[in-house]
Length: 445
Ligand code: ADP
Image 1 (cartoon, rainbow, N blue to C red):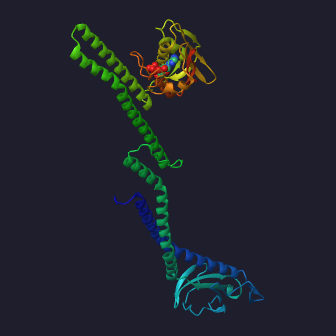
Image 2 (tube, rainbow, N blue to C red):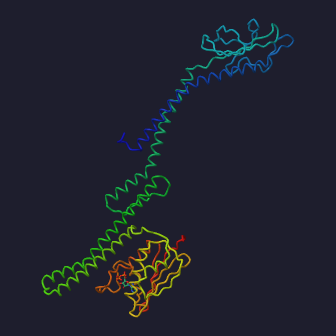
Image 3 (spheres, protein in one colour):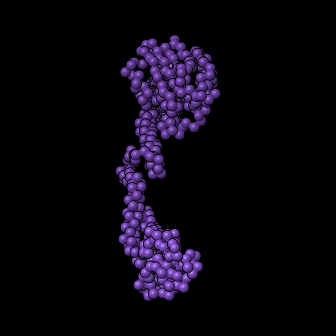
């Protein structure tokens, strides 16, 4: 049975069930039918007798049968006998040869030469000799005929029902299992082509298969995302680590060959140390970004007051200017939002003018909490304002030793997105920049 498909198993099961049920009902029908037919014939016999006796009377000492009296009707013959059982009216059917005694009100079957007869009598206390016997009789329905009629009908109907059941169950299960075939085909295609961008995409519905397909699609999306993030990390890391590694390698080779005094060696070691610190920062930034990409970084969402977050993050900066509105509550991860704020402040100092000032404001509009960092430094040209959010993009690509790697704003952008918010920038060259984080307000206090 294991080698059969579920479709086939269902079809076989329903067909066998249908066949067993049909045979069971056939037997039931056969056993009930003879009883039912007998009962119907008996009722017909009694009804005819009662109908007829209402039309029997005595008029001036003579037996009088009114118009409604029928001697033979629907196979039922009615006869009238005197008290001493001599036939007064009616004709005994030729095939009724039994010498059946009279019993008032009792319907019984009796054997006759041509088969069984149903007989019923009634004693009517009218006329001479105290009364009359009225008898109705009919040929009893033959069991054999009933059985062969039913079997004849069953021989035609049952195979049709069974074929219809088999065909119906096969078609329904085929139709029902079609989404499963789509799922299997898509999963195999994804597996063979090693391309995670494929989706099952079955039309929306509420059945189990649609839910399964939707879960698979979500899983593929997540896998694709993780896969892309990992690829991006590997590409970024190998690209960015190449420079400090070649500096370290060059410094080591140079030091081994040419450094003679302890001072020269210390200088070389300092350079190596700086590059190692740079690499370590770079790797932790890249790891954070990869986790943000994968959605695994955002774990501690809570209701927090943006102004309180600013106060606790910026307590060490004494020269910042604050414009903080209290009660601006958002749902967020405080350590990620602090990281975002520190990145913006660091940039504001780095790219702000030497005499410039940096101010931070927290406010709200109808649906959003706003956190802005403003500097009056070098500003960013309109053509660069779109690009600065990209990984490794730097407006001035001449790397000085303490310049960043061009990852800070990319991380800021990702943190904003992962909170369901976004960043905006208002900047003009030589005037300064305002970086603003927009976050949906939380309705929890
Ligand atoms: P990094 O500062 O490490 O170079 P970022 O991603 O933080 O990288 O910033 C990307 C680029 O955007 C910077 O190289 C700089 O040119 C520009 N930038 C960022 N913040 C400011 C700012 N406050 N004023 C002017 N330019 C800025």
